[in-house]
Length: 143
Image (cartoon, rainbow, N blue to C red):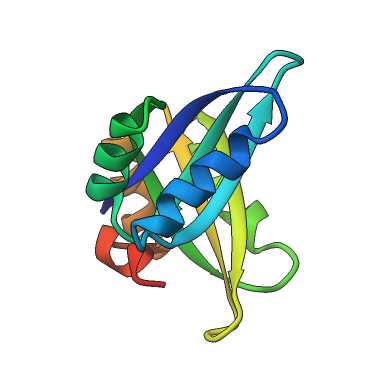
């Protein structure tokens, strides 16, 4: 149950983030989750969108540096300790989380955590065998 995350390499200057979101909006692509890691000169914009293939194509056509990455999306109860439980399972199985970001699905009152892991296939097996609910790519892109 992998999902596709899009990463865009951006200069850290006024208007670049607005440019990306405008290109996506003009092409009817909806951002489901977004995270930015930055330095003083550059940033990496990581996004989950409803149409990842189209988003990559459109962003490349507009001269953005874009890549796709496999991530895992887990759905958790929105309560203290839910994320700690999942991270404990991964840690107990010696699986490293490279990064993660979260958002709330307020319609279903759940938290969704997007994770980039060193060993995605093994992490999926471990999480599924531990009863953690994983979201499919289509589930995630249609939220």
